[in-house]
Image 1 (cartoon, rainbow, N blue to C red):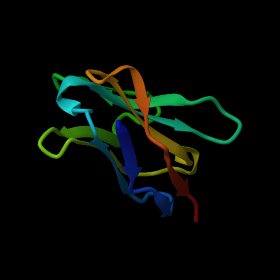
Image 2: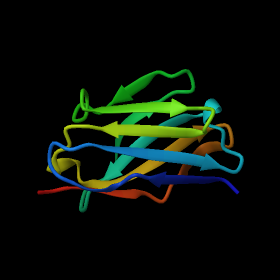
Image 3: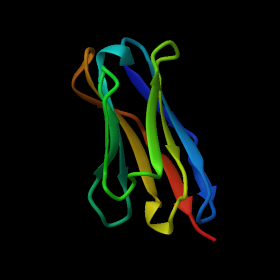
Length: 118
């Protein structure tokens, strides 16, 4: 069974930091996939936040550039999203997505809630 599991979300004050993790199990191996972090706020469409290719290239949404960093640990089959200088507008459910290898059409995790509030 293919599975992506996000963790690390929570409540944080503006200016704070969180690190999200996306762990793969089953037949997904991140080394062969492009992995992205998406988010969806209430009443808004899901949007791409950051992604990392199998070769390690990264790209970010303009709204998070300089604040968020995506990275991968192929040995642990895990992708991370380090989020610094968080703002209330970063509040959303964050989802992990993998494309490639065992996920030719994309696999999604269940999401993790991030709330930025004082």
